[in-house]
Length: 138
Picture 1: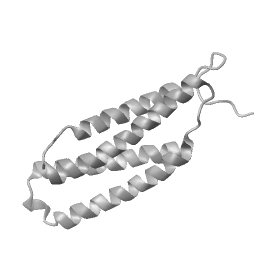
Picture 2: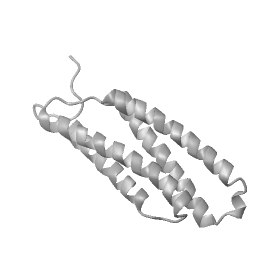
Picture 3: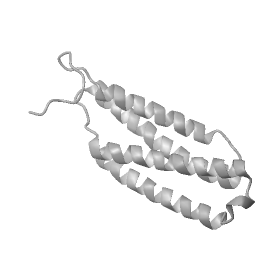
Picture 4: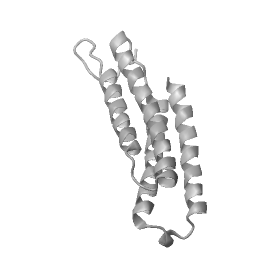
């Protein structure tokens, strides 16, 4: 799962760079577009970066826990974070280029990100001998 997050995070960072180039090419005169659309576009663009950073960090530091419940929570969290990333990229495309207004897709992407992080937190803080935190190095 670690490698999936790392590769996906790097690819998502490339998507962030590409969406930045789209914004530069499609809207070179920033003062000519509606300022609300500009803020919406930039925020959706930053959401992609935010999502890429979450995946990259998980790709570097994720340690799957022993035990069915903690591992299941971590897999659920990873699935939600992957779904969130897809929603956030879709939100950039649809809210910026198709609807040119807020549609709620980005809200669901942010909620899915929050849920994914919470599930990773719950799975990562598995109880072992009354202790919480990362497993001891033996």
